[in-house]
Image: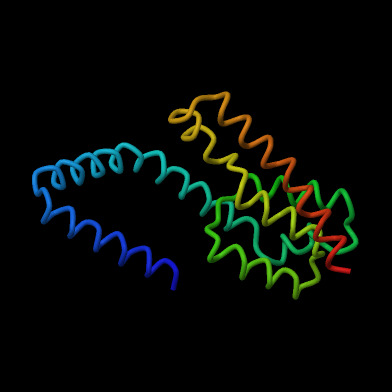
Length: 159
């Protein structure tokens, strides 16, 4: 629902902009299109890699790695899998629920979903290209560490 609201707001903004200044709006749309086309090859490669990873890592395999009794090793493995997998939130959260039903631990799922959403190992080349190596490594490193904080808090509050 929130996505629909954002699309409506963006469309209304575009229409208002178009009636206010057609030339600038057309110029902005062309710049956005060129930017999109520059990102498309890198993004297509990322999507292909993600499809390959998801083919290998079924929910059953992931739930074995993330078992409730896997402890710190399960957390580390979950963080690695989450960091290298790129799944949108609208798929990640139902997947986490399914894994929880299949016996995955809350703490392991916490670190998995946190790294999944915040750490972008697969997207690092693209991010480094556009934001620089220092910002990319700093953001991903801090996000990785914070994922363990989130998982620890979940472990405390989920009991």
